[in-house]
Image (cartoon, rainbow, N blue to C red; front, top):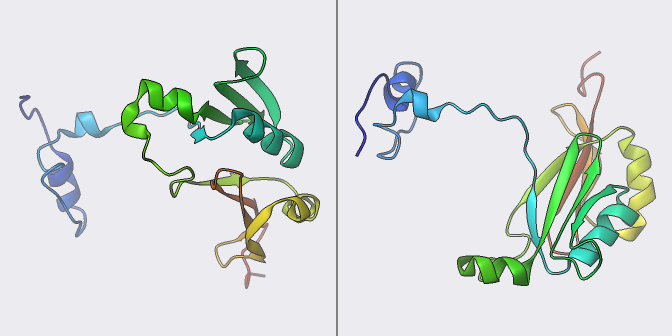
Length: 169
């Protein structure tokens, strides 16, 4: 067991606003709450690494990053587009190493929000080849976006920030 060495998340937050505090955060020192993240990479468990590569490369236009092994059948691969990187892990390989993952549904409620340039052109190019879950629309919060589903059920929203939110002149 560790001892409290300074203000906790609970005491710090409670003094600022009416927040819902739980037993898990009431005694956690603030120094343990801080994180200096430098990158986020979705790490998707997929039914077929090859099928995911085809979709993300051929349909969405990502570039292949790396594959393991070097030649098919793959157990791992990555794709990139600018600063965005996505990992694909073969489900059967993952469940051999981590059996607790076997019962998780692919897609599992995970969604990705990817900002792009020229969302209207991206929509026109890929909509005929994908399952569109949300039609192209301008949102009240200043984004023009649409949502699709990849072969394993992961939801991807492709969006572009507008120069001015709707209703602003």
